[in-house]
Image (tube, rainbow, N blue to C red; front, side, top):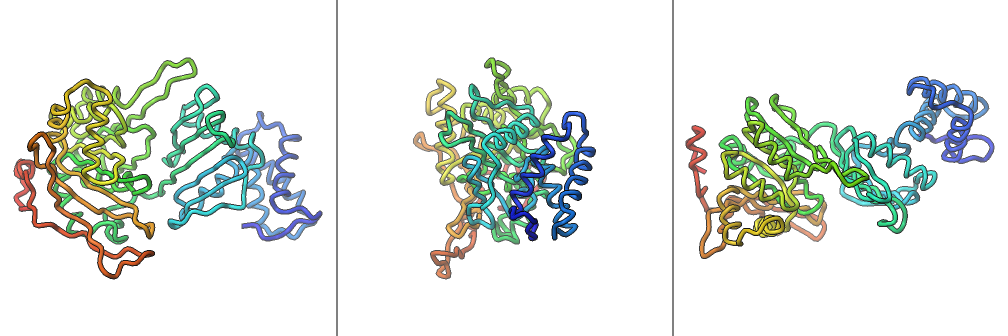
Length: 417
């Protein structure tokens, strides 16, 4: 970071803004390529810092800051370089909050103006082929590195543009890393590995920020390499690298005239005509749950998905609600669909000490008296060492055996779980 202070009583931020203003007023930006613009800024910075105490590293940082403010994402480029930051929350151009190492704090930095923030938003959104404006003020999109972005503009947001970025690691989290972090133990991971290979349908549930997508990425590593897998997401963020025959689909919002929308439901239906061996839906939120369950019930075993819920049982209730929101099926039929489609629910929790853990692995055993029946296979139990600030405990195997081992036998796995 820049530590020197320029002459003329300007702060470093003010100096960067002054150079940026000079570049915008004196350089024909539309005629220069990215490399040519960077070179021009570099020369201007060298000239303007001749009589200052800036080091070579400082001048490089100034050049990058100015370039980012014009062609990049401005201050976001700098924040995004910090791998320890997992979430960026922009509440108007003057307020930037981050989550770093599980702790949320406000940054001293800010955008130059609301217009600068709006320009940055348009760069983000347009690069992913999306649109956001006053008539369409809410959009979900992504950055080139896969990080998830949500944008809300005025008049919906009352205090200026709101941007929330969920950063993704440059290297996907593996199950081995999750074990090392204490998110799951080796025995439970080994069991899930067998269940994935045997094509059990698995739902991953949890609250916001509990690590559902991260866990889904890690779990997908257990899918045999030779299978044809189709992923379906609102904003493409899954990082599945081991599957060669991979088809990635992403929804599309309606354009400014209200047409052209392609929702998850349509993508799921279309995917069934692509000869998938597995379908992975990044997250189900609404009526598309019925299409997902239908796919699971019509020969597409081994499908994976995630959903927001407070417990594993709550995930099943939420699935009921989602299906009912888009169909006129009776509740009994919906519950039968869920019970016959979903085999396993893995529930994740963000604990009070900001750690993320698998707290329950539950199997669906059928329908009894009109209710979906479940049986836990693993349950997280806290120990006496836990305090208000730190969670200590273990994911323990229950005495319940795997209810249905048919898929294990079909896949040639003869281990008793």
